[in-house]
Length: 402
Image (cartoon, rainbow, N blue to C red):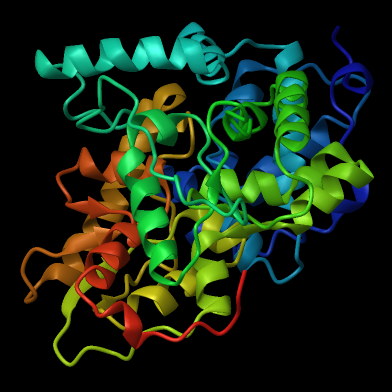
């Protein structure tokens, strides 16, 4: 299978929308750390255009250019021509499956997270290995993975809305879901949780170009979830793909499903009157996950929730990717580490004169990746839950009943 018409079929109008102005370059993490045009958005688009030729045969250099993209979509936010780079790179990675295979460690990992029983077994062994000193400073496995899956307290659930608990977060960082439930309960909301019956959303599979596996998992999520209530998500990556089910699956059922998906910070900030601002507030740095800032455009709602309790310290890197990128820290370890160093520099810069600050990020991948660099990371809802627990529950009036 050597010809482009059998492998790649990219939208020529989208390709031609790029005028190679270069305004995307400062926002591309791989270009920032390498200075290589082949590892920039406009460079990748230029190489994609070559694939339109019937004589095109993908070289290893060409494949490497596409594989090294983090898919952070910072370039889309910066592009004055609104080039849909995300669609181009997503379609390219789907078709790359014809010319190369993902590393076996990644393929095995993606199979495990798609099956709750296997993930449960893997979690037990990871927890045991961490007690022996392994995986304690991993960029893709959080510290303190519990050996036994913690049951989320939803005894008083009204069934509306539903908190999407996913796969890895459900087993490895259940405390984030507990913080979400605690925060929602403060406002009188007792949601149900999706749990193992729904499982993984398929975000990492779609991100890796595994189209058939993703579509099967996405269809299961739609079928197993209630068909009328709001769906709240506290992982930026999961929320982004759940909101895009309609576009990716192209079915009316999927489109209706996506309309009911909300980032949990977004839903809370819009629907409830938040407490008055505290007089004295701890300073905290907010690090925006790419899929919350560049895909969902919901990053400002995190600030809305944190602002009453904390002094928000902003980074000066315009939301540059931290290098986690789903399985990117596994498939492109060297680049991922170099990109993380850029984020570390930005974090350390704003800490000058302020001392060591905690960092809030609404995506488990970002949290784990930056924890490995030594930063004290928290999900925003963990901070919110801590402050709400100290307040008089009668002091906040709900705007709406759900």
